[in-house]
Amino acid sequence: MKKSVNKNEALKCELVQLFGEQEENIETAAQCLKVMSHPARLRILCALRGGEQTVQNLEYYTEIKQTTLSQHLSLLKSRGVLVSRREATYSFYRISSDKITELFDVIKEVYCT
View (cartoon, rainbow, N blue to C red):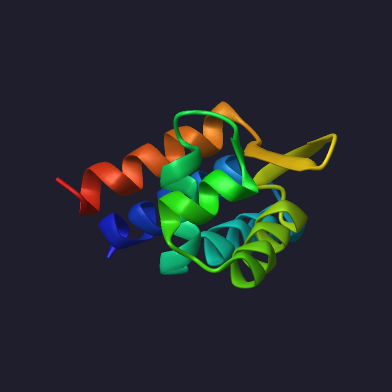
């Protein structure tokens, strides 16, 4: 019985270390993972893994129609996964942080090798 209690306490401590006592951090992580879990969005992340791309390039690489692609890009941007910039008539997108790229690389390694 004592071993089970120690294991439970260790798990509780680990969760506190990972997320603190802020429910907000868990919710943010869940929303980010949820938005990344769509197959089309994973294709977009794969295309952006090498760096910034225009919407036109993303449409070509992912084979997602422009209107649908724009919806996915907007959602990824609203959740902080992507950032964008405009130059003349072009919109450029990139992954917002190296940590998200690393997370995507782990997903790719686990499921695509």
